Image 1 (cartoon, helix red, strand yellow):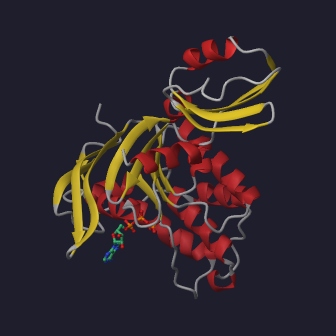
Image 2 (cartoon, protein in one colour):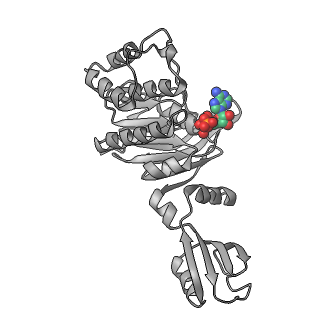
Length: 295
Ligand SMILES: Nc1ncnc2c1ncn2[C@@H]1O[C@H](COP(=O)(O)OP(=O)(O)OP(=O)(O)O)[C@@H](O)[C@H]1O
């Protein structure tokens, strides 16, 4: 069975300026895949090529085994897309706009429209120009999901949604995923990628620097240790590979550790401890680590 997404060596320049360079990754069927990097890293460019809104200079992009350039019409029936910014014909009512969108798919989407709008607390009888930015975003979400797509592409989906609505939105995406849809979500907010995704591609200055399982990213990388000792220990006791940013305040020591946890536990076990905290850093710290090392 073909992967939901297969991107190989995708490169796109805007004139002389870099868009994306040699981007490759796969998304398996049923997977929730995160795409993270700061503004301008190349997330939207990659997504626009996948949707045939941009033509790449080289490389290939396939969705369900279909070529994104040559078979974009077939692909469109199976893909739901939420762009980072949504623009609408302002004169329309929400219901009219959604029915109009549904007419492209040649199937009855009325129940889905009602269910999704209820879930998102969206009033179908409002005029588009009466809606706030957040409510327009909700229209985009319903529009992207109303045909029960097999692949959902979300470009910075949560900007403009309040925290409660973000929660509802994530639940909705999880349900769509249980229904069988694969998901690609771009974001520069690591917390939300961490909450939702199975795997993540990290993009920096147009290039993929890492594709990793969220669980591996969290497990195999940095941990923050803080501990209180009974009596003072030599300052260089923890001068070992993997230990970074050692701070000592009275009897309380703290540092960031990267590497096999057993090594550091053995080292710690020889010290008389009063208290110990070992914290799992969030993706933000891990991400910064990758960035600072320029991996
Ligand atoms: N239409 C365009 N013309 C020229 N350069 C562009 C154009 N669109 C994007 N770029 C450049 O391509 C690079 C990648 O931009 P892209 O929008 O793909 O990044 P992004 O990761 O999606 O960031 P953001 O979150 O800000 O949208 C940036 O350096 C950007 O300046």
